[in-house]
Image 1 (cartoon, rainbow, N blue to C red):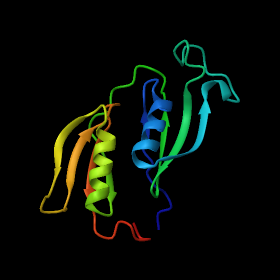
Image 2 (cartoon, helix red, strand yellow):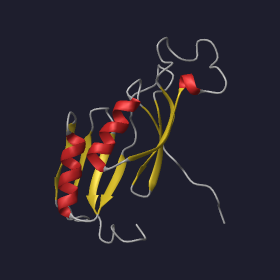
Image 3 (spheres, rainbow, N blue to C red):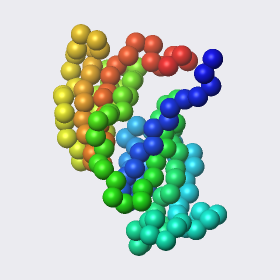
Length: 146
């Protein structure tokens, strides 16, 4: 039996703290841990972080529902988010509408939230940080096995 798991780590190019606050407001995300570059027990190697990044987020973890994600301001020079989206499954259509609207603030619609053959409500967007989201209503999502 495998005892490992995949945990996404998102790099926000200097906007991590803003992103954590946005996700808290939009979808109830809870920051579980946050460490700044200046809090590191060992100094960063010269040239590893851009000037002025000392107060930026070196590592954070935050929870969305039962999922824990990692986040950072990164070290500069990171590619923008591409090739993936985070899929947020919610229990009902009202919550899908609310989450979609909240995450869309300052972002752009990729696919409007609508009925599909696989979900009563499904839509895709890019949030203000360029992170792709897929919002869907999933039967049984609010149950303990979600």
